[in-house]
Length: 259
Length: 263
Image 1 (cartoon, rainbow over the protein chains, first blue to last red):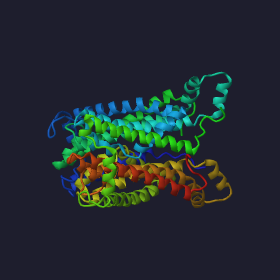
Image 2: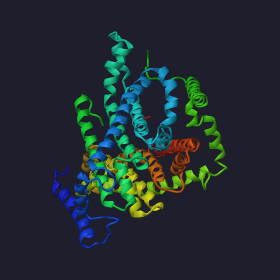
Image 3: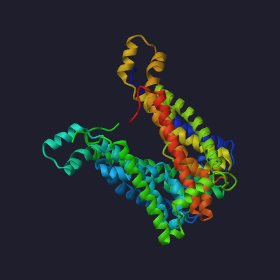
Image 4: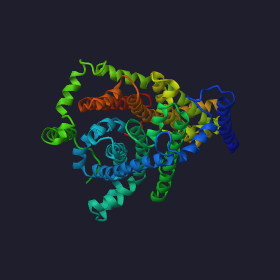
């Protein structure tokens, strides 16, 4: 077996080297134009300035983040609250499965973003259309994962439950749902990623606020520094969320550590 | 009760599916015909007939098959490049510790940024044409596949590697006979996810800026307030997305017979 080697210093070095090369090419050698790729210092300056300044798109970075978060969280929560129980019911009750699944399979292959234009026509440019679109993109993974989760319940466990006289509903709550929990949580996490992506796309197409709107406007006026700031904000928030959810997951899901 | 999750007989399934889909379409048609929603939304019959006629009559400059073809060609080029590079990078990262230490921090920085957030920057870098779309899809495919190839190499059973070494295999032999075959199912899982993301990304990229393709169809439908055109576009997107996923699964079943994930 190989001996345990630690290369953490290389990791730090590599990030530093990346930033150094970026700085070298952009700020020292001036090989790129300010309107295609600004240097790291410029991006940092813009980031700090954008925290308090509303130029050029009418809101500070914090306001943009807040607006995106509000909508995506709303749609995501709706998707989880409606999607997870529906998936569980579909997997547990055969009648529901037979009748709901075909309709669900019809909308499943359509990516959430593709609904944006339709929802804008139906509900206008405001909040509702975005929440509905985010809801749709969060709903699908929630249903799918809780469905597969319940389906993984072992028949033997159910037989034990039956032997001890559990009712159908008791078996669902005490045996099937705990079995499905790891996958349900995976679905919730996938849904969060999907809704965060979806809100960025929706804001790029029609909005007056939000991170997607900010980077789309910055493209129009050739300000890649603002675009990069926005992308960093989008990435950091996305990573933060999936980290928070995995913390919660470790709390709630006991037993089998999921794969 | 013998087996809780035994599927219903296929004829029963077909009948129920038929009833529920017909019911859904009827409800949609009734709502559109008899309520105020009809002023905004068009019914399923109109959408269906428009879908069929648009095979011969162009929407914009192309017929619907050509729009689909445009989007698909973008996806295929970006996806092929992205998955080739992604598989190589992922496997190298998983196998060589030094490459892992150098490349992974950079990869972890860009990974949480969704491909859609790259749209504005890619337009600034590569212009409004095909270049920016290829880049976006390359990125979308690359991120998904690299991670899966990496975790595939990392999750090789150490007992197998130990056994091979004990029997006198050198590093290269361990790599080609044990590590590569056992990470193929993971790579396919990555390809499966990446084809879905790529398809969604091309739709988004075309919605933001393009002159043809399925994304263009639905965004132009929004501009001209025509829900028929949007719905035709959505139907096309759904069908192609479904075909892509199914054919990916079929390829996987063909190529790694020994282990098919899931069902």
